[in-house]
Picture 1 (cartoon, rainbow, N blue to C red):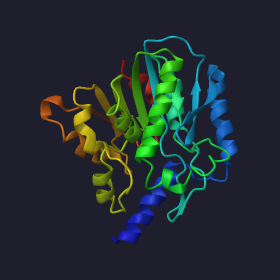
Picture 2 (cartoon, helix red, strand yellow):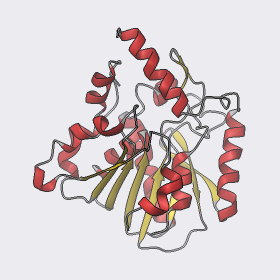
Picture 3 (cartoon, one colour):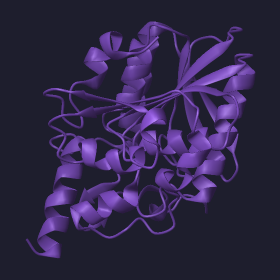
Length: 278
């Protein structure tokens, strides 16, 4: 299969995962209101965190002191409109990480969106398409997310953080865990943990300008990690995680959980009460 055809197939699959079918006409504001409505029955409130050049949406219950806080980090959202056209706004159609956070049962949880998601109008002069395409894991993006984590930690008086990232949010979570000393557990769900190996396997352009968790594996040695992949995930799956795991010596290799029948999008949130580790 030629490069252009592989690229078209890949981005078409990515569009489906992002929820384009029938939903892509929803405006960014409609997508934002849908997320707020999803969180409202649990009494969660919205807050805008100033983080570097960006504003980050956080959804969370009323703050109360807790020794350990789980922060669920959103995936890449609506990054592409079609195989050649980046979206003008990456706000997710289906905020899977929010649905995971709402289903968490072992510890208090909050939701943290990625830069430029749920940000209307987009932060003037700062949000650019590169921030949700090639440079989605750039140093400035990771620095902003790191600031957001610190604000949420202070808000809840937490001593430890559990980071849970869905899809590209798992990439972000791993990069954040490599930079912090207060993370007690790293969980990724359908993530890409070596995007260089992943783009090579997919036959697509590398994510130039993006940091790669596989390059920072040594900073994660000794940290408890659990990485969930779907056995039927054709977008990421084991191939997006295994090269990262192979950096570790066998005796210290993080745990990989491959869930039968699950795809990239299905059915993580629906099963999270069962899958979520204590």
